[in-house]
Length: 206
Image (tube, rainbow, N blue to C red; front, side):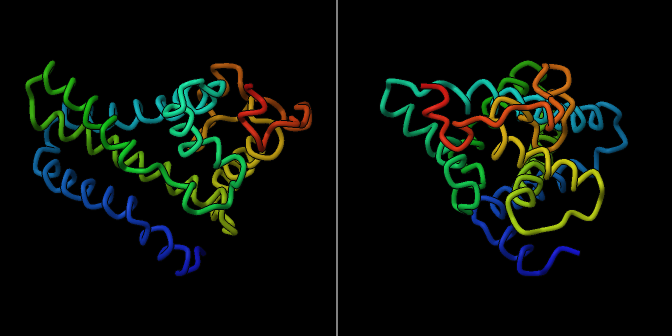
C-alpha cells in the first residue's frame, strides 16, 4: 500500500494539483455527454496520443544532442538532462506546466479548429490530461521508494530504472513498453551494455 506521505508529496506538488483541477473541470464538463460514442472516442484518442507523444518526445526531443543555442540547452537541461544526472531530485521529476500546458493547448486548439466541436475537444483534452497525470504518477513511483502493488507496476518501474542506470538508449516508455517494442528500443536487460554516459546525456550526445 502506498504510504500517505507519498500521496501527500505527489498531490501536493503545484504542477500536479493544478493539472488535477483542470482535469477535474474537463471531466465535469464531459460527463453529461458520455452517452455519445464520439465523446468516448475523443477521450480514448487523447489518451492514445499522449502515450505516443510520451515516447516520441522522450526519445527524439529530451535526448537530443546538446544544442549550441544556450536557451534551448538550458531548456533541455531543465526538462531532462539534469533529471538523468540526479534522478531522485523531486524538483526535476515532474513536467512543469509552463512546458506541458502550452503543448496541450496547441494540440487542442488545432483539434477545435478542425472539428468546431467544443464537447469533442474538451473530451479529448480531458483524455490527454488524465493520461498525463497517470504518466506523472508512474514516473513518480519509479523514482521514489515505493513498491508498486501490481506485477505490471513493478515491471514498469524496473524498466524505467534500467533507462536511468543501465543504458539511456533503451526503454523510453514510462507508462508502457509498446512503442519501445514497435520502435526497436526495447531490449533484454541482460543483453544491454551499461552505458558510461547514462547519467550524463550531454556527454553521451556530445
